[in-house]
Amino acid sequence: MSEEMEPEQRTPAEHPPQGVLADVAALAKGLATTFGEMVRKPVTLEYPESKSPRSERWRGRHYLRRYENGLERCIGCELCAANCPVGCILVIAAENTDEHRVSPGERYAKVYEINMLRCIFCGYCEEACPVQAIVLGPIYELSDTSRDKFVYTKEMLLEPNPDQQEPIYVGRK
Image (cartoon, rainbow, N blue to C red; front, top):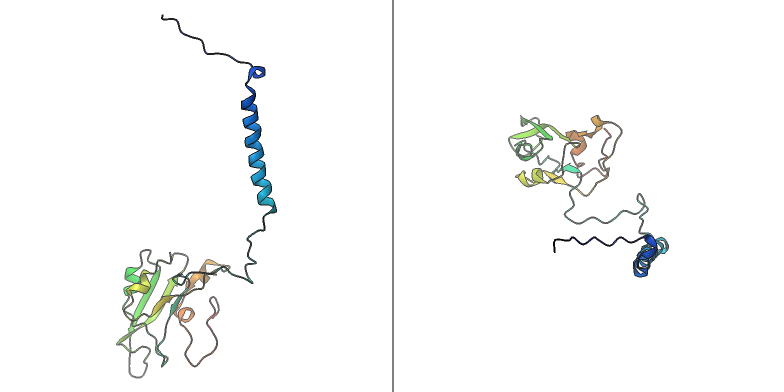
């Protein structure tokens, strides 16, 4: 009883026919899927002319907002820089004077820079700001020819004065 049974050895000619038929059926099913996709109308957008819709909560390019009277909202508190997980925001504050009033508070952001190559668009800077000075807008087309142009300065981030009609263009000074 200790005899071991040898596994059956079959030659390819002795393969059962249902194995070959199953293989041919699987091949036909795969080819049917391929040909079905070839005749289906593509879902391609002609990108620059027609853009895919974004959700309302989309976080894109940063903007520094102003009040209706033209004063900057940023008070130079540096909470946005402290809250940024990657440290891409640099804020250097200065004191407001009566002769040189930039924002309604005691201080303003003399230097405000964002390194867009490091930014992960998490929105923590927007949530940390007590005066809603920094917002993330809907623009997501951020490309340029050199790394230096991705450090957005205060002038590039500020929205225009309410009396100006010309919008801000990123990368232009």
